[in-house]
Amino acid sequence: MFVPQAKILVLAMLSLLLAPAAQAANPTRQFYGNWQKHQQGFAYRSYYYKPSPNYAGFKHHHVIRHPKHPQHLYFYNPYKQQFWGRCPVAANGKPHYSLLAEKDRSGDLEKIPEKAFPPYADLPPIPESTDGETLDLPPDDLPDLGEKSKP
Image 1 (tube, one colour):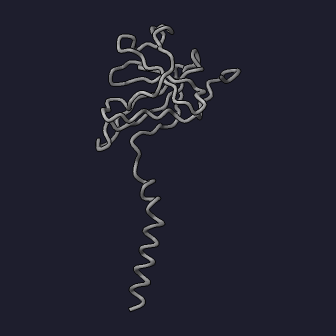
Image 2 (tube, one colour):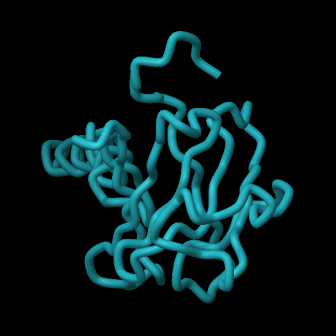
Image 3 (tube, one colour):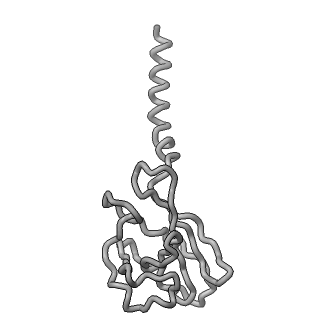
């Protein structure tokens, strides 16, 4: 009689210890991939997201760090083939984001005038979401683009 109760207690304790590991194994709603170098000299990483919490799988956009604009990270929508905003590389933990107006978005970063980027504001929603969940900024592990001095 005592042995089954001990087994139940051990199983209960094990389930409490394993619960955080099970939660960690579940993917989050948004995350960033590793940096990749592009043959044209810039670096990019994928931004994976779920438009809604119950969306099966993930969609993705890209975050680009370009040597001509090393002080910003640019967000690119591969489905629409256009840049849609940017954040500073040195946000210092602040939720800074500059969301381009629809009319100012382009597939060519050089065709977007600097004045088209509004002042930094709060983070935008996760792309295509309607529940108010905001985008997570990328980690601060910047790729080496061969710059002489980092921003």
